[in-house]
Image (cartoon, rainbow, N blue to C red; front, top):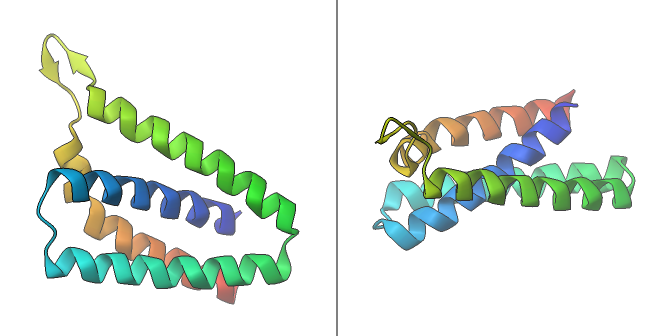
Length: 113
């Protein structure tokens, strides 16, 4: 279960990173975050392909890709209450470092446990 949660967070992170690249200036700190998440994703997929059926991983990857895209698109379009945005894309950008740490820890735990 931890493997699939981490897999979802990886797809969600990369979707946010793609939007961030288009809208904001990319700094060295952001590039370092991308490298950490890329290494974590590589290790997680390596573990998954060695221990879980390939079609299961590909099916869940496709599902998580679609869900992440829809979630980020919904935030981009805006969720408004009384004309004020409830949750904006800038809040997602501010949560990227936290998401990086969560992904690194969960991928390590998924591989070890």
